[in-house]
Image (cartoon, rainbow over all chains, first blue to last red; front, side):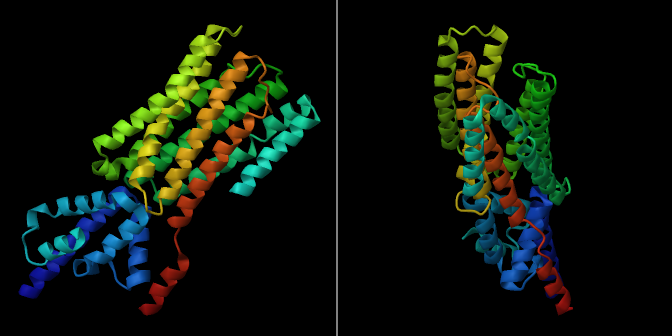
Length: 95
Length: 254
């Protein structure tokens, strides 16, 4: 049961990231997922456990204002920010 | 990029040194391939985004901007070479002017996903730069005693004003994306617009002076704007291109 809930949260976090990246553009989504795989051998849902990978890639692409993109992801997760796992993701991506 | 800038500059100067007629012909024809390259690159960038997301719409706007200026350049050439008419002011100006809102929309849409990072300080600093660019140009316009009709003088003054307006989002873009890979695009956008401001101001000066002709050395600056923009768009395409090797790499893992 606990594992299922965690999987659901992971899927929701992944969906939030995807929504924000696709909102920017198809190329941004493609490039971020490509770099996640190329540099860390992971996929978008894996950012749930490793938010620093996503943060690093966004910084590399968009520099100083990548924080604004991260804020959009965090805003998408506002309703579940206190939930276990999601709070760790938010803390990890905010550092 | 440096090679392209130097080569076009030298080619224009060589044509000018041969004769004024050579400069006019060369100065007209060179505006076919160079703005054409920018149109092709902007269409590639727009196609990559598939019209989705904020950047998808931004690149469509940029393609419209580059197409407008390309059409304007071709009208200029046709009027001067084939109809022996004076190309300024003419219908070409309609397309040049129509390009500015398209460029402005591009910049706004591109910056839209990171709008929360824009601070009041950044806006004030950008506006100060815009005013600093506008003041000398407007001074030059009002102080001139040219024989040009009022419409041509006003039209000539419009361009540096429009350049100054589009300079603001370019400045914001360069500041916002500082340290990121897309910063190169915005640095070149900014440099391109600064070159265009200088070119339009010089064009206005020489037009008021009645010493401007197509192929005049000031046209080098107009060409440089297209080249600088093209390298910016090319770099952006390169960053976000689909890398097939990594996709096949993924396939092999299955």
